Image 1 (cartoon, rainbow, N blue to C red):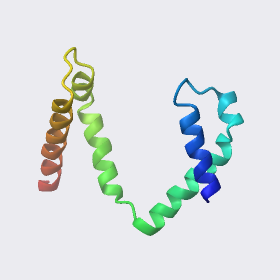
Image 2: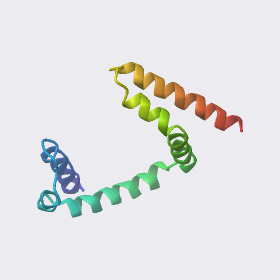
Image 3: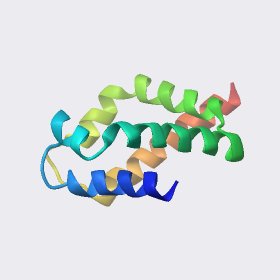
Length: 101
């Protein structure tokens, strides 16, 4: 498993500087790395568990508030930390409404 994780790390580090192409990904062993990632995800789900209700709530939140999220992320002003706090507050409000239902 260490070899698989190292391949993933190397691919991410190697391709961070410039855009990866399909040839680069094949050269750095992307296909084995993808299999490793899938295996790792299955192991995580088995040992830690995944709360699919929360994932569905996240997707519903993103779909319902896509316009607002886009305007926050791509506004003309540089908000930095304020943007993250606003998103957190928006999610908290959404989740509190979902729980009350």
